Length: 450
Ligand code: TYD
Ligand code: MG
Image 1 (cartoon, rainbow, N blue to C red):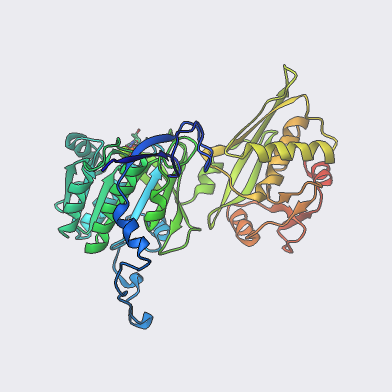
Image 2 (cartoon, protein in one colour; image 1 turned 135 degrees about the vertical axis):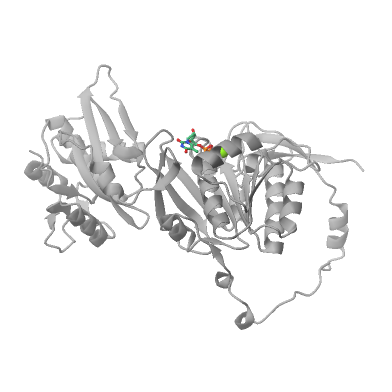
C-alpha cells in the first residue's frame, strides 16, 4: 500500500495536501511539515457500509458516580499554589506546566516533589533534559532529597507510560514534553505528532492508574506553547508560569483547570534556596519607590488578588520625526490608544515626545482599570508634576476621555487601605469615602497632577 503524506502546521495542527508558506488556519509562516498519514482504507470500508462499528456505551446513572473531587489531593508546600490548583494536585489528573526556558519550572517541580514525597507519597521525576548528576545537584541545593523521591533520565514516552502504568508512583513529573519521543513516529521530538501522541500515551497511563502527572512544556518568547498548542486540549490543568526570568516576580496562574477556578494566582520569587511565595507583593513592589514625576501607584488585580504596583512613565523629546513608544508590562496597542485619547481630550502635546512605560517588578498588567494610572503617569512625566503619594489610582479610560468603572473596586480599596494610603482616585460610580470620584480625564489631570 502506498503511504500518503500530508503537510501539518506545527503551530495549530491543521493539515494540508500541498505545502504552503503560510498556514491559512492560524497564519503562522513556514510552519508546515510533511508527515506520513497512515492508511485509512479500513476506516473507509466501515464508513461505506453506513453502520457504526462501535459497541453500546457503558453508561451509569449520574447520581452513582463518585465525583473526582472526592479523590485525594497532593498538597504542595505553597499555599497559593494549592489554591491555584483548587486544593492541591488531584490524583489521576494531568497538569501541564508551561513557561519560558529558565523561568524556574524544574526548580518549582523539584520543590513540589520534595513536599509530596515528605508527605509519604512515592514520587518519580523523569527528565529528558538533564542528567542524574545535574538533578541531584539541584535537589541537594533545594534540600529536596527524600527516601520516596526517585529519578530517571528518559526521553521515551513508551517507557515513561509503562512506568506510570505500574502504579508504583503517586506523582510523576515529566520534564519536558518537547524532549519526548515515540519510536513509532519518525518526526523529530517537539513536533505536533510527537507531542500529541506522547501526551496521549502518558495521559492514558495516568488515568488508568490514578497517578497524578505534571508535564513541563516550554513556551516561546511570545508566550505560546513552543511548537504545538495541541496539548492544552488534552490535559486537565494548564498552569502558566510567567514573569521576569532574571529577578522580579513570577506569576503562576491556571489558564485552564477542570477541578478549580482560573482566577487565582500565586506569586513567586527566585532565591538562593529555590522559589518562595511572595506573601505581601504590594509591600515588596512599593519598597523601593521614590515619588518622582511620572510615577503613579495603580491598584490592580492579578487574578483574584489585589496588588498595588508602581507605573512609571518617562517622556523625552523625539529626535526623529516619528515618536517612539515603548511599554514593558503593558499592551503597546492600548498605550497608543491612551496617548491618542490624551492628545485629543486634554491639552497635552505628545506627538513630538518619546514615551516609555514601565510596570515595576516585572508585572504584566492585564487589567482595563490600569488606563487611568497610565494616563496620569504620562501626564505627570510630560508636565514634570507629581501626584501626592497618599493616592492610589484605578479606572478605565474611554475614548471620550471619560473615566469608567472598574470591577472589584472593594478589593482594590482594601489593599490600598492596608498599605496605608489615604485615598484612591477612581471612577465616580464607586460610592466609598475612600475614593475621590473622577469623571473625566482632563479635569482629573488638572486637579490632581501638580
Ligand atoms: P530552572 O528551574 O532550571 O528553569 P526551567 O526548568 O524553567 O528552564 O531554573 C531557572 C533558573 O533559576 C536558573 O537559571 C537557575 C536559577 N536558580 C536559582 O536562582 N536558585 C535556585 O535555587 C535554583 C535551583 C535555580
Ligand atoms: Mg528545566
